[in-house]
Length: 245
Ligand SMILES: [Zn+2]
Image (cartoon, rainbow, N blue to C red):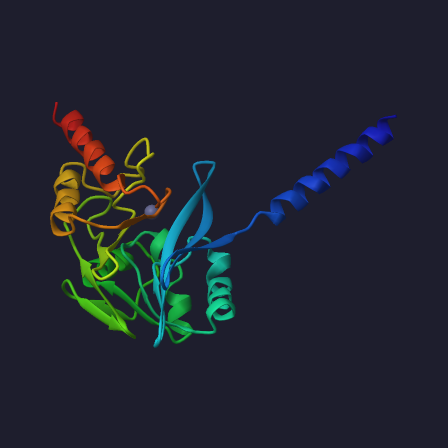
C-alpha cells in the first residue's frame, strides 16, 4: 500500500514537473500593424511576474525595445522573430537601468545588434553592475529605422531616476516601460530606486506631451487598458500626499 502511494506521489510530481515545463516562457502578441509585444517571466518576492517588451518589424530589420527579463530567452526571442518574420533584430533600446530592461544588452551587442541607452542609464548600469549598451544617447532623440520613426523622451524621475518613454507618433503608441503601471495595478510597484515626490509630476509631463495615445504599453500589467497613465498619476498623487504628512 505504502509503495502504491509512493508511486502515485511520484507520478503526481512527474506530471507537475511536466506541467511546469509546458508553461511558455516567452509569449509574443500582435499589437497593431508591425508592432508586437513580447512577454517573459521572472520571480519577484515569490510571485511569477510578467515583463513586457515590444518589437517593431521594419523594412530595415527589427527594432527591439527593452530585453527579456528571463535570461534564458535572449536567443529564443531572436529565433522566434527570425522564424515569424524572416528578419533579424538590428537595434535594441533599453528604457531604464533595471535588469528587466537591460539584462540582454551585452548578449545582443555580441550578436551584432546596435544597443542603446541614455547616458544617465549607462551611468546607473555601470554603478549597479548591470549590462551596458554600446551606444549612448545624450538627449531626447528621434530614431529613424526603416520606414518608421519614433522619439525617446525623458520626463523626469519616477520609477527610477533615468526612466524614459518612447513615442511612435504616427501610430500613437506610447511605450511607457516600468514608469507607467497597468490600470488594474494596486500600487506603483518597486520604488526602492524611485522618486516618490517627483513621480506624479513626471507622469504628468508624459501626459502633457502625449495627450492622445491610442495604445499605452506598460511593463508588468495588461497593456489593453488606456487608463493606465491616468491611474498611475492618481497613485503617484496619493503616494506623494502620504509621504508629505
Ligand atoms: Zn520593471
